Length: 267
Image (tube, rainbow, N blue to C red; front, side):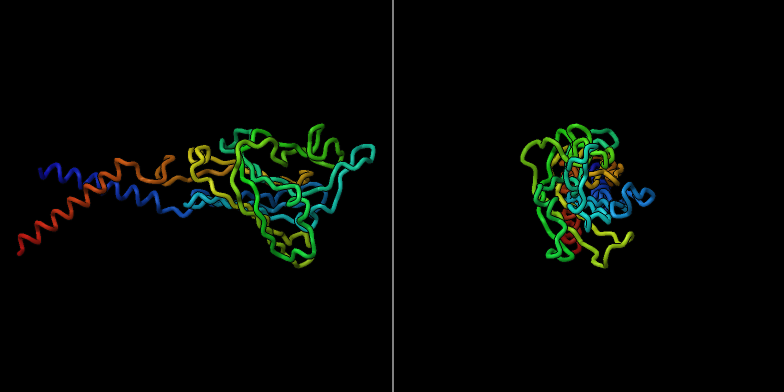
């Protein structure tokens, strides 16, 4: 019997250590996608500096985009080769791929037309809060081209900027903008923050890498990159499996039994 008890104690101790390490990391992702080396086209007003990505233990993903573009959202237009208006340049959607570097993007944080077009307003102040839709998608929209957001404009760059067809109902997410109100300045970056929860979504729970991309609708500058998902247990499970819980309970029961026996003997 003593051999069995010792085996249980060793297995339980291992399970306790494994489960503790699974909960020890504060973030599954905590990294920066740097874009400071690429000022983009059209001048510093379109510049994107970086993208900070965090995936917390409660499955909330937060993506902060640092860019000069907020002050110029919806203030400049694009035209085709004949001088025909093809749309104002506005905030793009956050595009996400759960297969890492393997495209296409299959999820997005989607802004409504009124949200993306109404962001420059002197009455809004320095901090804006909105709700957005985090959803699965089956396609994306390019900046230019026949079916692009700005169609055949000659003043846009190539790149994916908007979500295309959505799949399912999606989930509500939080969208905030912190506007650095120190005047127009090439290094005075505002922060566009996307926050959404991926709990229970298999594509995220099983992902080892995630791809992110954001740009204004003309794609004059694009911040994109692939980040690794750091799972402490080396797999996709972030909580102990049922067998582990059983071993933990057996270990606790054994320790209680030993303590009771020791107390009875001393009495």
